[in-house]
Length: 550
Image 1 (tube, rainbow, N blue to C red):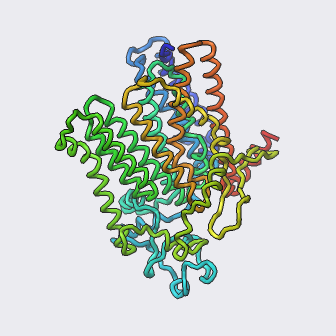
Image 2: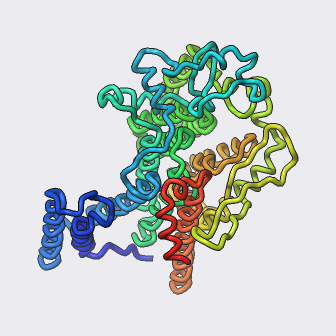
């Protein structure tokens, strides 16, 4: 298959669309809720003028093409920026329950920890309360006093509240809160890390395309970006912007960001230690955001150490080898020491993150051995992979199911979950990875496959043995499995195109259809989410949508 370049009119077309959208936003600002006043303000006039200018510029470029705008990199960047703008807008729409302006109804956990950091201590700036402190066992849900919602899931130790979630998000916002003199609530972290994850996933997709599948058309590649941006459970998490989603999102942002830098580190003939250092730094931050990612990070470090040794000349130059692997182990080692000190300073143990001291529905301090059990494996396997959604008669037409078909055990619990095979049917293309010919790609390609596959298997196994089944946990592995499915899809297209052009067009049409179906399911399931946040906070919007789909 010959690589199809973009049309020379890509940039002018998008400029024209931008101008039209700006003009329409200015004209209908009041009706769209952008401007609370019906009268024309100066900002609306400026927006209208800007829109007209963009349209005129696009007309000029249509009539008199400029050579720099015909660059494939410029056209790719222009298209990518517009795809990002659309996805970021949808993210903002979901997270503000359909109005773009009200960034509220969220939690304040990281905010409180950042306030604590700014005051020079590691505990939250919140008093536990006399009744809770005087309880015989504050961790016992049956014999403790009532408390406010903002205390839920905090870790209580020696009279202080701590977070068992990693401190990295709070470290990031602490200077901003001091500078702005206002709280940065968890909703902003959820949005930031979701947007950042999309950026890293997009850059990985483009890098894999140009490096390993340059013969593919751009119109096969670019639909994969909205797919990885809207695939379940990404929009789901945005519709529940709480500390849980912020912690998981931060962990995945740094995990995939590190994977991107690792890919760059092995891109050229010689190892790029600068990118390897950045990979190690990002992975240390991943563990510092979500401790459970430590298993993936240990695997990453081991794989990279092996890969460097494998590609080195024989006999192995130990001095050079140590210098190369130190690029990743220095940030990882410093990160491990910092996390160990942080835990020791709070809980008197470098390996204690505070989960056992959690104020929650279970007494984890007494039954910590029940958190990970083999009995949960089959239940979680069904929930996360095979559980279907339920069809309903009104919008959003589908909703997730809570699986209650399991033996009554004290600790196991399940939330509403749709299995990946039903929530994202595009993922079946992961099978294409097994049909690559031997040595068809460079060693870097297989290195990245092993990197993603190892993290996917490790994170999945961790979820399968965990006592709690939740849709948000799928964020821990959705980027890895989607990237692998995209590579499998490209491999299928490449193989079929070499044999039958007509069949390849049919296959690509089927692939695009599964992209659309997977995106649609991801968005529709997110309207329900776990808390019905959209319907609860903006019932008028749901009523209007119901009128469109009676």
